[in-house]
Image (cartoon, rainbow, N blue to C red; front, side):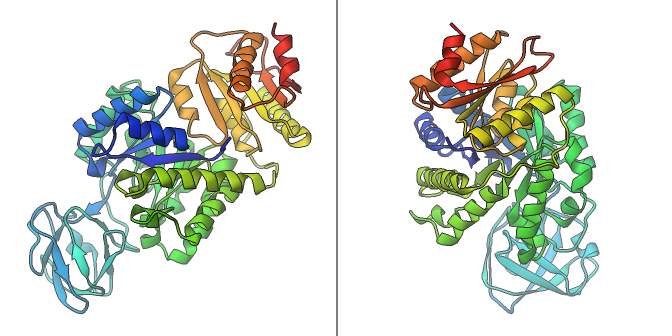
Length: 470
């Protein structure tokens, strides 16, 4: 079983149930919808098709967040290296040597010498002169500036609102359609995620927030952000524009370590298999990138354009899954002693014992049941070597756990005894050939009801454990 999860970005332009099923069977665990390129009607069709395939697949919706983009009005501008261009803030029409971006006050926050990076840094402008209403910039490299493309201002902290009207619309949409995750873009501080949480609380929604870290402010404030989110996405595209690229691997590793230690889910994203948007095979550097993220212990890897509009979406998922599986097999188990303690001392002690039993005895699976998902997440934080089969009493929790390292959740409609849920899981795993009868299995369970949590750890062969349930 692959332990590292895969998030695949899909578009309503290509979301037939058969296509989604093929990605799911290849190793996709979570479907992401990028609202920057989606209307609600298309997003709803995509969600409905996902649930036609399986009610176990969680959906993650990306908000745009406090970002700047080139104007949606006007025409694409072809620029040549060395030419000058006039840069305006506002919703005007771009054409000729006149470019509009969505931030009204851009001419007041930039000075000569500042850089303006467009479309993930594909085109760079350098400010050489400012007037009362616009900036004059030199074009540093040739290209085509299209409408609605990202704009980054490296080193400049802007006072942008946490949520746009469009973000609020999609948060309400996510609540209405029981989406599992909201991934908020350009999170700078805890206030950015608290603005979303306030809306969720008002609707009594259990949707979990993923903070996308893609600027220096987000990196600097990560310790205040983590307590308020389910997890973090290391969004390396914009991050590598805002911060020197050579620092990104270090920041990626530091963010992964912080998330593991604080039992927060972490996703590594952006250009993991970028060449496969147009090519059937990845580069060796891309394969190494995936493997290094796995070696670092990330919960999940994300595909963006590769699956949203690329020519080889299925192949991208298959290659990512194979690479992750091989990397996991070669990764040594290293017990992390810095993980934040479980809030139930007994549950924490038994979870550690279960993971140590797997490492010492080479067990093939951990079986547990969970009400809130906390014990399963704690188990996953140790980054063990075998899958965690979690039986969940809540559909929302089941979908949430699909994003966590090594956790394979199933839904149980009513609370069952240890014998009953162990029997159901073992029969399923034996029938599907995930386990052999002589494989060692660790059971983490309790005798006092789901609200109390686990009270014992049991280790034996699948056959012995199954016989004990009869």
